[in-house]
Image (cartoon, rainbow, N blue to C red; front, side, top):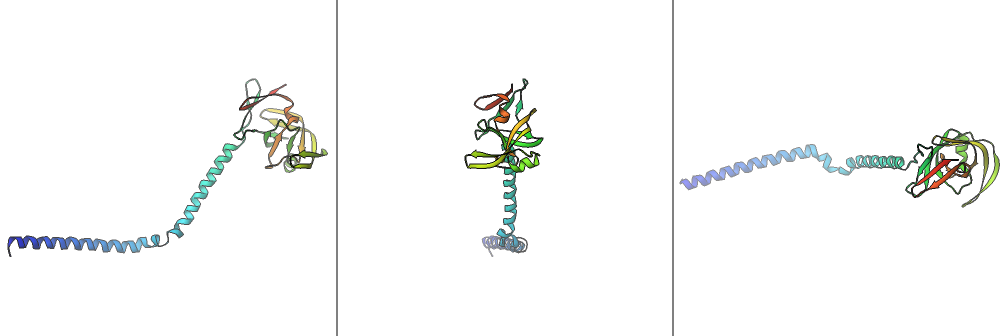
Length: 201
């Protein structure tokens, strides 16, 4: 056998050995894949759908909590001279937190409303009893209700004790109400583009 034949023979043997090693590695990997990865690749939808739903529910819940906190009415700011400052919300209205008979309420300030108004459910919880039966004219037609005098209404540290409250007028959530002229008339009101200022008379 010549030198060239020996080199060719050795080269062929090395190639066969290399190919054998590659085939063994493939066989091992194929067995490992079937044994350990088979279940994951057969039904990705079954195992992946529930965790994905949980993830997106958590994301949506977090967004809801953040938006609720972001849109929650702020308490009126009290300036050093005693003025109450209420900032305009993104929807163009003025909102603030306060209380009626000591029970926390979220007010929308309505300078066109003659009364502070709340729902009947809120009135029961705030112990607003009695009053005079009345029929309120609203944009949605006449609504029965009652007018109660001598109710304590507070915004920030400012409290007015003898306020007329219309019960049955307010819509929306139970703890929401309108802050109307029966409270606002106790103040001088000035409005700018983004603020409403209530100054005690």
